[in-house]
Length: 225
DNA sequence: AGCCATGCACCG
DNA sequence: CGGTGCATGGCT
Image 1 (cartoon, rainbow, N blue to C red):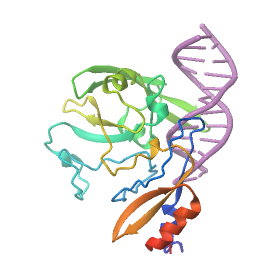
Image 2 (image 1 turned 90 degrees about the horizontal axis):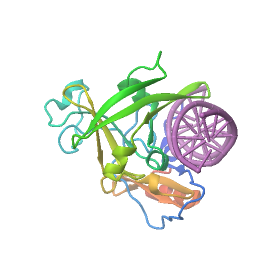
Image 3 (image 1 turned 45 degrees about the vertical axis):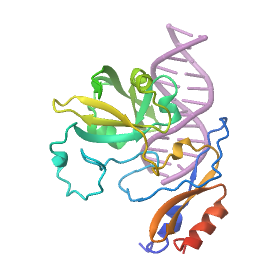
Image 4 (image 1 turned 45 degrees about the horizontal axis):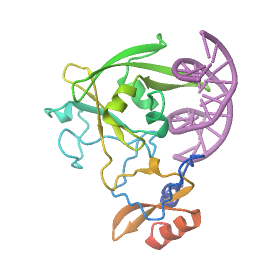
């Protein structure tokens, strides 16, 4: 494969989808994000991968042993997801990315739905339903019954919901705010373009209102070419 | 080719 | 009229 060189430009510029009718929230400024590097299977800008272990998010490279977190104090982080407006808005249905659904939730090979007991970090217990919808020739996995938790935590689109496994194996739900500088792309509405910029040797992600502007900035920063 | 966000039709 | 389940479309 001869890809190689200018991968950056293609990967760097990606369009954010517009949410038809909504409060016109313009991004006139510049949202910067440091440290882009998650890249594994099907990763979406909206799906954040948890690499932080129990303590603060120190960017350490862990050699893949599962129990890395070891004693942390709270539980082993399974994955987290930034809530979309669909996740947070209505009936409390949270779409679970397939890879995580298959990895961390009970298999639905035979059942169409499965009850998943869960506890939040405050000790409140919830009864969630893990199920799937048929979509095209595949499946879409959804966690239902999240509304109480979303309400209790005042979760809105752009907030991050975390799924951990407690010591007893129970599913633990938590949430956190995106750290400053973390992409809140889901909150941005309207047709925007993003570019990865090289600013003084540090990588940033910036959003623009036109593809041209994004490309121009990318070129200027030295990553476009 | 596939995923997922979201709209919406249908059914209670 | 509200919610479930689905289909479509945008994006990777």
